[in-house]
Image (cartoon, rainbow, N blue to C red; front, side):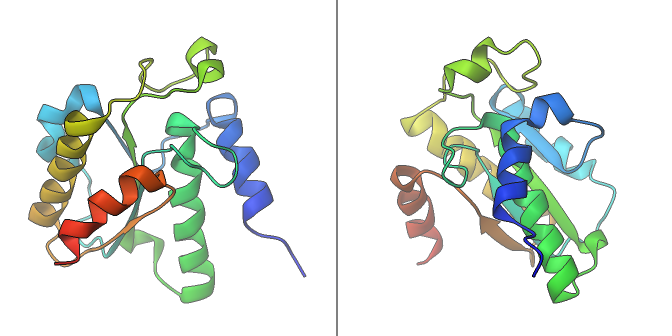
Length: 163
């Protein structure tokens, strides 16, 4: 039986900046929060049906991987394509780059993310809400899946969406 997910995706997340080859998905940095609508409008596919988004804070059992967390949305959507038959043309992996508290990444000259401690509290929740609103405007019927957000952020983010 082939192993197709956790060990491989985890290693890819840890080494993301080292093994980066080409752009896959959308990276939205806190620094670019005022351009979020434009960033999403520049996605060439108008028929996105599934978005998997992470902020990279709780990647598998590895902890904060910053933008290296992109391996999670890519991996999840690849599984949905391979096992669920969803065309990759209908999928969009997204990382919300809110900084990282991983000192090793902050010190890594190859790290491609925002070299800043993670934003928290109101700044964080406002940024994620801006993303949700921009997604709803661009693709009103999309399935938006949150992956590997820290527990302390996941529940406050999901509560208003479930009402």
